[in-house]
Amino acid sequence: MENCIFCKIVKGEIPCNKVYEDDKVIAFNDINPEAPVHVLVVPKTHIKSIMDLSGDEHQLISHVFKVISEIAKDLKLSEKGFRIVNNIGEDGGQTVPHIHFHILGGRSMQWPPG
Ligand code: 5GP
Ligand code: ZN
Image: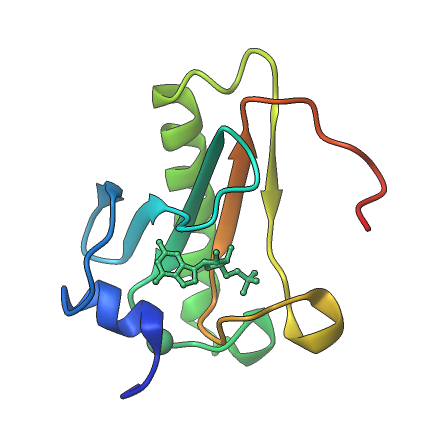
């Protein structure tokens, strides 16, 4: 997608602080962190949200969760806990229309969120 900021990061057209990459996903630090650890895990294919996945792409999401657990282990988040967030659409607070999962950690989280 031409004007998608995450597609530009995937293509290397916009720099990012990368923490993980493979052929299917890239993960990098959020530019505006909401917690001491705030990593975005982004599938490389431009898909707007989980509502737009086609058959094969559901496997991609299970891969994303495997990657999240590996990153959480590397960043030593698993002992105290952390949060995974996926915002969908306007009411969900999605501001970048390219599917992504937030890893938030390094502090205690509140529930319910605002
Ligand atoms: P959303 O609100 O769509 O769930 O999350 C989008 C996230 O992307 C926000 O937390 C925002 O700070 C982050 N973000 C937006 N533009 C950029 C960027 O150019 N680089 C990085 N690293 N993060 C970005
Ligand atoms: Zn995109």
